[in-house]
Length: 588
Image (cartoon, rainbow, N blue to C red; front, top):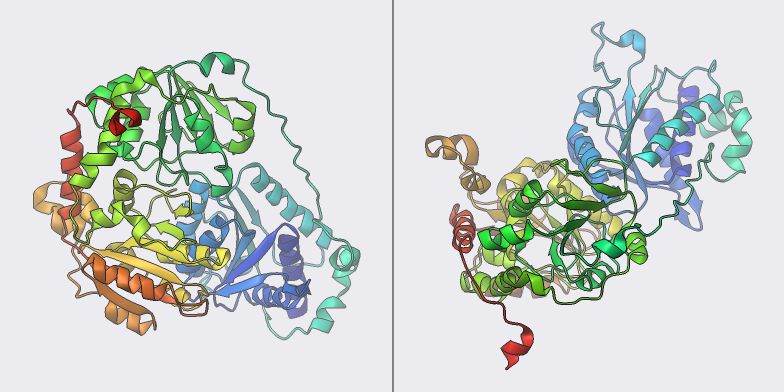
């Protein structure tokens, strides 16, 4: 039986590789042995002097799932995860939820006990079929390996699931029961097994997938009413977008003569930064609610003010985003373009107006926020707010940026100014604080570029096991831990004061994170001033690519200072009035 288990696993994994899997993430376990050993076999096979797949390991399934998510977010090929049976599989649930919410492709292979061992007291046997409820886009609940079922049937069954994923990106869950024995098969016994004879030519001679489903190129056309709408008053919202979809978007948007608002996740430098603040202004908000059309690229906006604007807006509403998933939480009467952004803007010529004269107040207030309001309300101390507003001071030129959830990502969105030199990643599908370190490690591993990750102290505590993954990262990586002694985000919410600290913020009152970093052989430093921080960053930038070039920079800050300043800025701008001056007037 051990030989046939390996044959069954070989067909599954070969099918996945033919479908584009380049990374396989493996947790320890016995029941998953046939899958694990076949993954190692694939890694040992080379094409053009490169392994067919790269295997990654981690002892913690929850962290492994988020590491795989990071690999997949970096768009370096599809990613598979192999875990054993029982709660090992259940620990993947948070990463699967995030993958579904962001349309990230993962293949989850859960080894299982055969049906006769379920619900009878057998060890490590739980109900694994449909265990992830509606979160996978496709599920394959395989029977125990049997020669009564052909290899062609197995390949076709898997291909049906792949086709569903091609139509709607997300997770494919493949539950694979194995009966013992699990060990002892040799390569000669596996390749000689008669069950594989019917697919020998495909296995060893014919490239490509078992079932070919070419996706026909959709022939998009210019919207028939574009000439009318492009000459109206409008707002362009740019939400979460992959970097590869942003080419030419800013230039196109700036030629539309409309107000352009960019989310921190957009990978597009905002021509009118700090929108989360100036949209709080009553005059500006009322004016923008009266525009004729809102054109949205991407989705998933961080800003509370942007979301409030969208909730209240009732005019013409267009969304451009690939996929079939609904991305309008406010359920507008809308037009949805299931299209990549470069294709859409190539078909819709801008109107060529560079200065929207109908939007004097929004332009004036945005200009004031950029030049005066935000800079004048920040001091020179190293704090959460000054770090959020000055990310370019800590970012190496060729580094990626991963922003954790809760307070800091909101501060960056409100106070920061994005750069086209850095690709921004987040886990804002479900916006959880779990698995952030693991996700950042996966992105850094796939992209092979320096990484800067920004996470809160509670998020860091939540994912301590994933510090082990950092030991394998091959490029320089900096993790900033913003230590405000708990969940400062709750200071922005209407939580009753008498329970806020004990039941929401939950201060950890730890001395710092130096000892836990030492346990994982990761360098740690505590920074209190900008001068000290930038000296450390200069030294770190000279480090060459090799294992272990990870630095945790802990920044201790006042628990409530950032949230209080953030709230103050929003309140101050609400009733403000300003007069627009263009650059020529400034120079005069």
